[in-house]
Image (cartoon, rainbow, N blue to C red; front, side):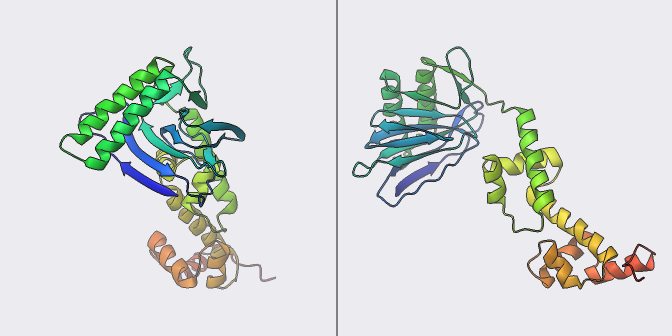
Length: 283
């Protein structure tokens, strides 16, 4: 897979939709794309070749001239036809969602007309500006992105992505429940993001807003709280307790436990017993 990607920061004073990134890719027979999702909208423009585009479980053919518009958090991927590899542009547009002309919400839209042709022309111009990086290139890319969006307005509605707070809260609750049930297993931020089809960045931001701490901090806290319960109520060795709640080694368990509580696991057990907390059943 040949990939050329440029990331852009929101210009000072710019509000609303803006170009987060643009990339040009060419399938060279070594690309095995898996369904993925983004926390921004994407414009997928086929420049050459043909293949299959997949949204959730739905697949359909695409070829030179097709323009796909994918809304945030919608799992999608693409695959080239053997012998006719695709070359395409992908632009990530932050701060917007695509809607049907009547305002109906949709997962994605497919265009193949004069509007898609015009969008392709300006997307390629944006890529050239990113490559050359001559004076004023960021402003030019911003203006050209606005032109692309104005062209799309001729075919559909565009609006700010007020991703439902209720939906986001539900997804964060799902992640929290999953960590509560699987905290002792190896868990990564990437795996948690895949669970909700969010990007890692969006998951961290949303979960922190909803719960008050990051997913990894919550997972660590959950493991520490469970280890406290085991230290208070069992005679299991400290190292065994640490491993049973998901820590990879005794030293790492002791380090994180002391950071969270101010004392070592052994000292915590001793203090708990001294205070008369429930100990192991010695009958």
